[in-house]
Image (cartoon, rainbow, N blue to C red; front, side, top):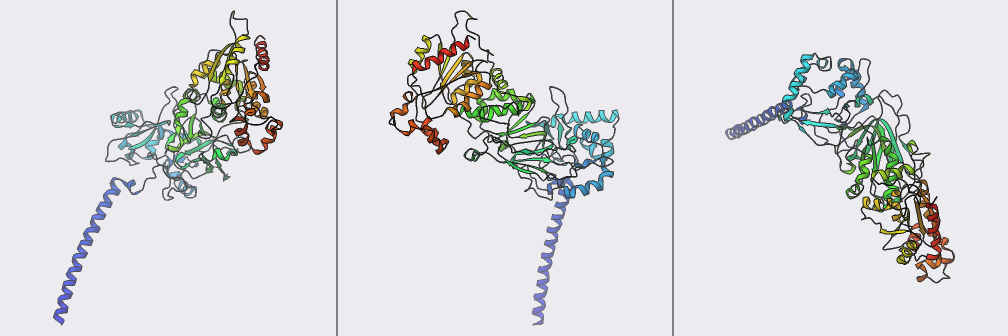
Length: 591
C-alpha cells in the first residue's frame, strides 16, 4: 500500500508541476503584454467617453484639473487633451492637485495661449522641459519648429467642422493617441475674414456672470443668457456655466427649459427637447471652441403653419440674433431640415455659420456667450421697450424686405405715377374661411379702380415668389388666417384689410394681425362680417345661440371656438357693404 500511495503522490506532484509551469507561462505572457501596452499606448488603459455621456454619467475616475489661478501662474496640465472626448472636471480633487503643483508647473496666461496656439514638433515637444516649451524660444528653435510642422503637413487630415477649431490627426500609427506626443491635438483655426486667433478661451476662466442664468418671468417665453466659460454638450442636453475657481460664492443654479416660445402650452411643448442649464465646476472638456455667441432654440412646435413660422420662430429669432450681425452660431433642437431649407435665405442673413443639429451633435462646444431660448412677447410682435436695442416690427418688416431683395420699401401716393392703378391682392383659401363669391368681389374692386391679383398662400408656397407678389401691391386683404402673415413683405404704409369671420373673434384677430400690422408701419382696416355673410346660416337656424350670443361659446376654450367658427365657416362678402372699405383704402393711398 505504501508503494501504491507513493506512486500516486509522485504522479500528483508531476501534474501540479505541469500546471504551475503553465500558470507561470500565462502570467509571464500577460505581464509582457501589459508592459508593452503601457509603454506604447498608456491611454489605451482608459476607456473613451467618446462624447456620449452626460456629466452625471461620466466616470469620476477620469479627472482633469480645471485651470486654477496661482501666484506664479497656472498649471499647464489643465490644457485640453486633444482627443476631443469629454472628461470630468472635479473641483474637490482638482483644487488640491493644482495647488500642489502650481509652483512646479506654473505658467502665465499668455504662455498657455502660446502652448495652445503654436504648432510644435512632435518629438521635440516631448523632449523639451515645460519651461523650454512655454518660455521664450529663440528664432532658430522657432524656425526649426515650423519646418518640422511643414514636414508633417501632408500627413495631417483636416476634419470638416462647424466649430472655430480644426482637428489635425497624424496618420503615423505608432504614437497615435498619445497626449505627450501631441499626435492628436486642437490647433487654432484663424478666421479668414479678419485674421483673429481663436485660442483665447483660457482667458474666460475668471470671467464671472453675476446675473441669474435664466429669466422665467416672461409670460410668453423663458430665456437663459450667460457670459463666461460656457460648455454646451448637446448629447447630454446640457448647457453649463463654469464657475470661476477664484469665485468664493457657489451659485448652485439649475434650470430646465424648453427653448420654444409657447410657455404653458403643454400640447406644444411635449414635443420639444428639454435643455438643462446649470452652474457648475464640473463639466465635460471642450472639444470645439467658438469665438461667437451661441443661440439655442427649437423648431418643432407649431412650425409648418405660416403664422407660427413667424410668431414662434422668425420674429423671436430676429429679435434675439440681429444684434450679432451674423456673428452668431445657431444650435437647433428638434431640427426640421425641410423648414431650414424653406427659410434658408433668412438663416443666411442672421448667421454666417452652418446650423448645428442639437439632437445629433456629440461634441462639447465652448462659448463665451450663450442664449438659450428666444426673446418673444405678444403674438407676432416685438416689444421695443423690452427687446435688445429696442428692435421693433418696423425693423423686422425692413429686414424681411431686404432679406428677399424686395424692390419697394414704401407705397407710392396715387397720381405720382400717371395712369397707374393701385394693386389689390386678395388672399384666397381653399378649405375653410373661403370667399364664396370671389368673382363678384374681384369685379367690384376692378370697377372702383383696382388692379386685382388673387393668390393662395399655403405651406407649399414658394416664399420668395409670394414675397415679390405681396411687395408689388398697395392693398392686401383676406379672411383671418395664416395667409395674412405675408403682410411682412408689404411696403411701408401699405394697407392690410382683415375680414373677421362671425363668432366674436374681433379681439383674437386684432391681436394676431391688427396690432402687428400697425406696429410694422402698415395701415390696418378691420371688417367684421354680419350674420348674412356667414355660411353658418346654412348649418344653424337664425335664432340659434351661435348668432344671438356667440361670445358664450368662448367659455369652452379656443379649440372649441376654432372648430365652431373657423374650421366650418366660409364667407360671402356683401359687396355693397364692403365697397366702402375699399373706397376708404383708395382715399388713404391718395394721402
